[in-house]
Image 1 (cartoon, rainbow, N blue to C red):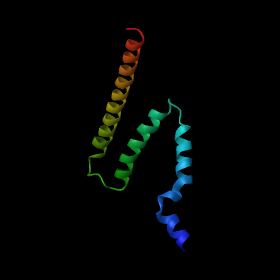
Image 2: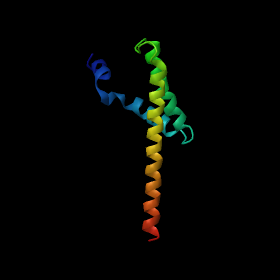
Image 3: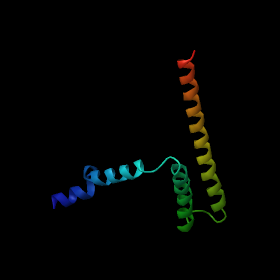
Length: 94
């Protein structure tokens, strides 16, 4: 009884699930990761539509917003990487 209760409520029992998810994430290649992220965000919007949690006519707006948010995030990541390499180059070759 106690073991079953712990398995259902104690996050420490989720170690194997965590390890499997971690392994799967490590196997996602860099060229696939952006598509995976985009599909995840747009998939959430589709689920909201399917469950009728979006007002009528808001699906396209929500999808557009999700794409804009992803695009903005990618732009910030690219700028961060460019800044890193610029500072790295300046430190190496003053």
